[in-house]
Length: 93
Image (cartoon, rainbow, N blue to C red):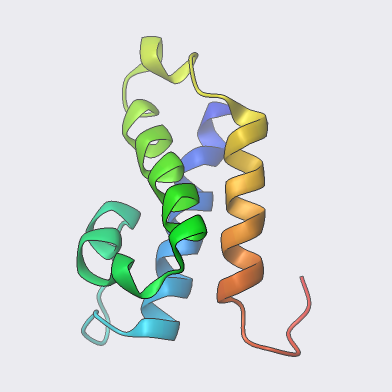
């Protein structure tokens, strides 16, 4: 996994949250940080923790020196857990 993959993965989770819980106007794209502030309470506690890990990694990815400190394995596990929960039933990968 590369540093460039962090932002698209975080945006994917944000769009899934917006589709499932609402909170965005039609035609707008939210980032994960704003979706966590708006609708983060709708997630189960365990997944809120995973989402906070993703938000922190997304913030760190903006700065190259900090981006090297991101735990990519932990980030991928958080992404997998959140997308697994937020995807509609019956939809594959």
